[in-house]
Image (cartoon, rainbow, N blue to C red; front, top):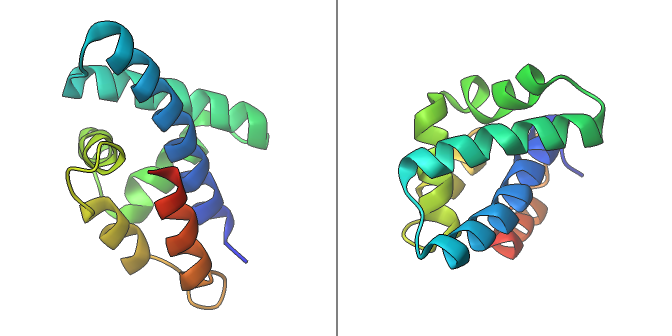
Length: 113
């Protein structure tokens, strides 16, 4: 079982992965600025799908992980392009033991990559 926080973060990463792959293949790469724009678009899509506000989703990916918006975008891009696992470490470090199953969370995070 996963908390709403972790569910929303995972949904943003899944949506972002689709968009990063699409954008990188058409443009021959992706910049941090592109990642920030795509991340904001993903907040909106996930919010609609989960019937919450965009700011609620953004909050889960930033404030609740103690990250600035641009840092989340950069770390997500690096994670999704297999440059490092820093974002996974931050997410795991912020799980709620009473609500989040660490094994399930790790499995779902790695499936996104």
